[in-house]
Image (cartoon, rainbow, N blue to C red; front, side, top):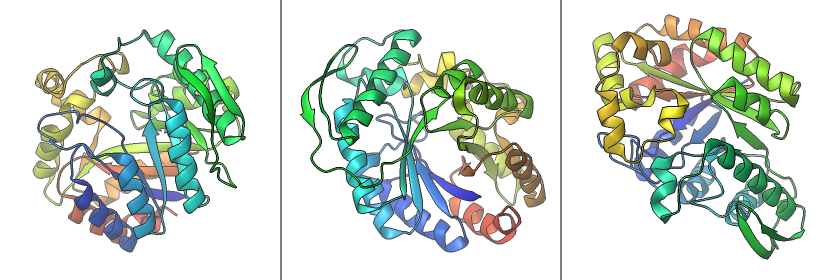
Length: 318
């Protein structure tokens, strides 16, 4: 089982994230993931580096495998994503995978196009995935639908194609993702809700395919610091997906987060100063069948988290 360190571009400068992911590898983390945003979730987070530039550096600076969650179709033409992923996969064979989702208004509105309905975003994503795969197969692609590609051919293609992982938060989306994705990635939440997502993915065609989990947690030796740090950085990120995808600017997430109930927040983000408690939570996720867990410590104190988990938690998970 791979245990990944999640590099949050919304919270840290790319130069800091490069240093942190190197430290994570030294501590025993065996994989990495990162976000791909134009805006942060919150003005309090305050960063948003370009993931694709950073990924090349991170893959060169470590021996870890990496995945990125991307939304092709609006901010990015899928032909560009096919080219970017192919380049990384050529340089770093079998160390890169791409997760794809329908995105958030927060990031995609910057090109001035309208924000489509969820049904149209799903259809657009499916078109984008088909275009990416066709380009990786060496086809010349012309497509005019919810996305447009005109006579595109990818000349540099990887010998081993990256996995295309479907990102899903709800059971309904997970069932749909199971029909076309190579694997599933979802986010941590109460076990019953998470099991619904897993079951839907398998029923939709995902049986036997890998499953990845992004775990949102907050660790600090001081529990109050773990709680306050999580609330300060991440309290606007725990709303239902139907809300998260529709807010337009980071300040809107801050406004919404000001009304979040702390008890409800702690159902979505695992907060504790007890490393054994964190281990128990992660072992519960492992038992659900995930091949990789990417740990996102949502507070700003990353070094104590990396070192403590590397020494006391990771060896008991593999």
